[in-house]
Length: 66
Image (tube, rainbow, N blue to C red; front, side, top):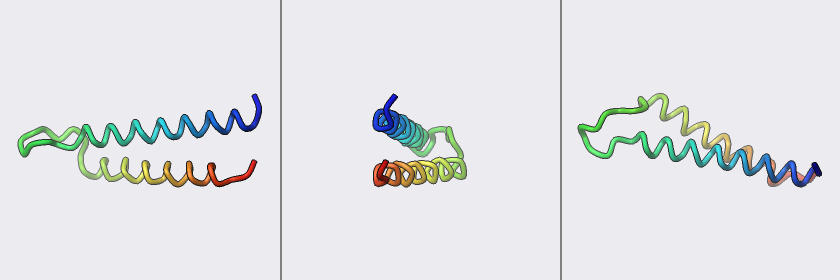
């Protein structure tokens, strides 16, 4: 596999992982006051930080010259 193809696949995987984490976060937010808490707030904060970190990694890879 060529370097460019590998880079594209890595970026796609990281982007998909970020989207999955964002979807999980959005689904975990209670819509109404009496909805159950699926993911406690500290864990949601960690997941949000992971999304931010993945954004940074994707930007770094996109900006690098191979």
